[in-house]
Image (cartoon, rainbow, N blue to C red):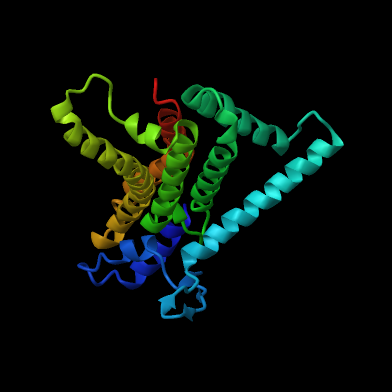
Length: 279
């Protein structure tokens, strides 16, 4: 079972006499200023304030750093294996498979000509989200992509890349001119301009909400199913609750991969629409 489930079970054992207390679910989903290792204790994280801004290190920040470290170590090992042999083996073979998948099945079909310029960004996003998602399935860890601040930041970066790519290819005036479909009556131009500009901002919003909601929902469902045992104060529901929770947990493994693919694919699609407006 994943980290949030393990911690939830421990907490609910202590809270079993309080039937109305359901806040423990959000407690294990939201960010915090410590890392839980219940029932062994917790590690407090440093609070940092700079020029009136709270830039304290939180649990999700730690696991973002850990995701970054894992990626650096993995691709460092992959690069060393390529220096020894041009034929990938072991984990290097898996890494190459994913890289080729992003290149040939995501970037190239959706962006088309010139996709190579955007491939490094798309690979970075794909592997970061994938690593963060899988890391959240381990005991005592946290899923950073269930934090709306993280997904909003990723979506904002995608938004900047999309606009920069479109403006670089078509020019500033040409890019915004290309937002208006050909043949639109003159009296509809102001309305269409507002609609298209709003559309530019709804795309990254959709990216952020989709990733955040999907990664949060699975954990909430698992916690709720396990919590039924203690809320109903009977172990007769335990086999059913655990069976369904295990099924959702296995489904979360698939969702972790799918959500990395969807975020990368949609980012690539929006880049392609911005760069090749004539299509």
